Image (cartoon, rainbow, N blue to C red; front, side, top):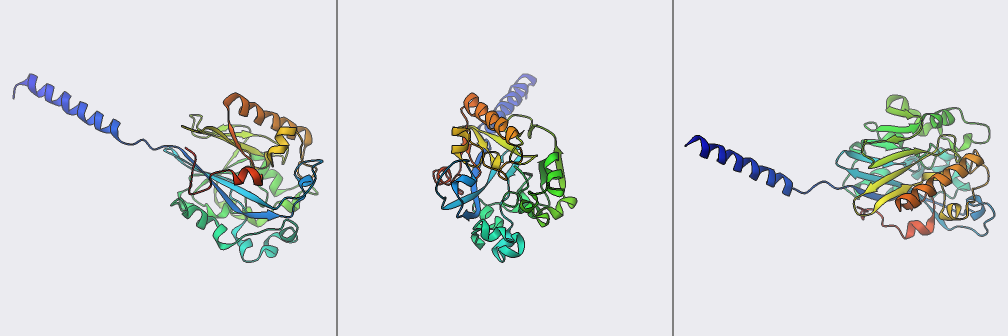
Length: 287
């Protein structure tokens, strides 16, 4: 074969290979919404100062964000050990919070809805370390736990009046895990697709996340930086102990409102029952 024809053939083959690669489906980002059981019997005033009436069941939300760069879980719910004996793990708070959990609410059962195991999680991001958001840290030994340094300190040596919300057994295994103790904000993948933002107020080291999806756009995951939509709409924080620092809580509300307005972001709140009912839940997803 003549050199010129051989060169043309090689160029054609290279072009065909490139076209074939471009035709392959691109892995997309997806956000899944879950709940780790429910809390019940709460006065609305416990979530929003001055509110009246009571809630029914309040969701305990957690989320999974799938991306080509890895799978992220945001918060990890009530400890699955409470399913067998809530009082043994939570003490009097089990009754006081009206904890409701079944075996179907366990983390492995929830993740199985979307074909995942706990070992598939690359990053476990904690909005904070209270008992209903950080209960299952020990189920993710292969994940990097992303948490504010100040929150770890608050959990291990809690202030008087706040210790009951930190269950030491929930994070006893952290000493054997890879923990990224951050101070401030973090762009998790370095491309703006999943940002972790410091927002103290509820606890000293609270944080929220902003996931960016191709179709849905930006989605804010508040954890307990904001309990319910009414908090943000009316600028009403919960009473103590729902906040550890009221001034910081107001600043964090303002930060979330700015991102909501600047980026047209959708917001998923930590415990809003009405918003949760209207949300697509796993195995459905946002993309």
